[in-house]
Image (tube, rainbow, N blue to C red; front, side):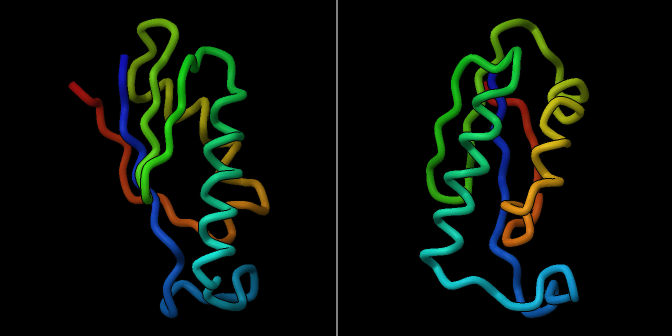
Length: 93
């Protein structure tokens, strides 16, 4: 199955003690690439392509949206994600 994961850079309204500042574009791109790399290492995921703020994910088997969300959830708990925010995860045609 194919999915599109959309994320965004944190904004001023997201700034908290865990995310004390809005990253510059270079830091955002670096975090986004590292996040896509983390996802590509998850068992059951066969291909990951990052384009802009979207990450295109192909699963090796018929993993559903809920299962994929559970598989990638630990990647959201990394330091990389302090500069990114989840927007959506949708099945792609």
